[in-house]
Amino acid sequence: MIEDDIDRWLQARQDTKYREMQVKILPSLSPDAIIGVRTPDLRKYAKELGKREDVNEFLAALPHRFFEENQLHAFIISELKDYGQCMTELTRFLPYVDNWASCDQMSPKVFKKHRQELIAYIRNWIASGNCYTVRFGLKMLMEHFLDEDFTADYVEMAASVQSDEYYVNMMIAWYFATALAKQYDAVVPFIEGNRLAPWTHNKAIQKALESYRIPAARKDYLRNLKRRA
Image 1 (cartoon, rainbow, N blue to C red):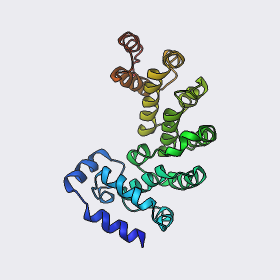
Image 2 (image 1 turned 90 degrees about the horizontal axis):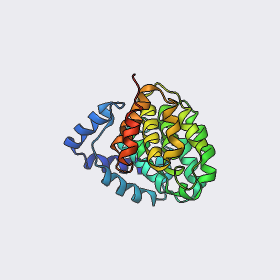
Image 3 (image 1 turned 60 degrees about the vertical axis):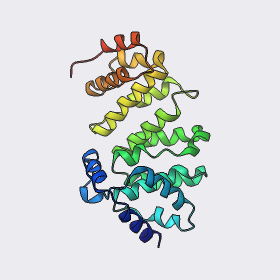
Image 4 (image 1 turned 135 degrees about the vertical axis):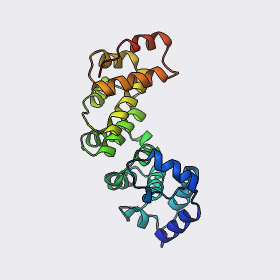
């Protein structure tokens, strides 16, 4: 069975020092859920698994026991070439995503050719109330709608998200910092108007100040827009 093959492969590649580091940076997970397999190895193995005729058995076996299985799942989805299949598998998988890494490292390549269909899903993901589904929706909004398909309506979508979840608010901040680098004139009014919660507002400015893509004069202006918590 493919699940047995995967388990043997993962256990054979455990790196205990790497595992110790992952336990620290993935606080939402139980240490027992982390084996400790390096990400490049997982990406390579995911491509091999994606070619197997029985890969759908693994994709259907939710929830997974280990973080690394979720990583493999995310990487397999990212490589799917058929948009319909990709969205079906993604929709099934998203409720089980339980950490920022599996969320952030999942980026379906096929979405680049299907942006207009994608935006409706993004709206639903952002409105879902599920921490990592919301984070994923914001990430897709950041990746696919800050360049040629940009409109200020999409910034409004991000600004309208209200959450007490750290990983949601951090993604909002990341989105706005990136948006300030790419679409400054359209986005800075959202900062000037204090549209974000104070912590998220200040984190967005902090990230913008760290960006090499934003000129020094704009950074000086943004620095003066910081708010007291």
